[in-house]
Image: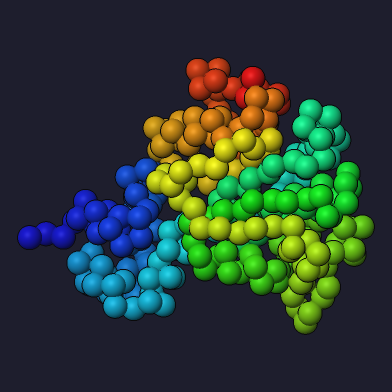
Length: 258
């Protein structure tokens, strides 16, 4: 029997609950083949066996699969829109106890950026962010809250000074910011979505999904938002068929549930 990529996708689904059918095949297969080669393993069957036996390799594989490229205040001009327009509008609609979900939050850069952005409008004691990712390794990194100088370079200078402490070459996010975020494992393609959110942030993850999987996720996000709630997506993403999916478009990367 030839242990091909179809066999591998089924095995990965059983092992990790990650459905590779939802990802663009050419791109994902190339990434996986590179990892197999890097580990000097011969073929998909042997790699599956290695994943079952080697916990470290398994965790490396999941992290590799979930494509974690993240940074604080990514695309600063969009965070200006959040500061000047989105947050004030949401507070006007829903009050200060906003329900916010940072989906596919990676190493925590996004939810911590949200806390800092909100801190300009309300006390930290009122801020609660629900942050999820399917990779428990990056969630542990997020909870540790240590970042490189490069990953925090777009943070506004006043907030950087207020909420980061330099430890050697790294920068540690303040505990009072960390206390505003609850992290949890969640698979966007498989798990039940939380409900009644005022603001959902999911950026630069869905570009790796097929069009069908994207639409499925966008529809689920719509149902997770309250009427008047807003979805913020990445700079490489646009919901072309937003009307058909039920959204109003506020601006390039912000979509509202009517």
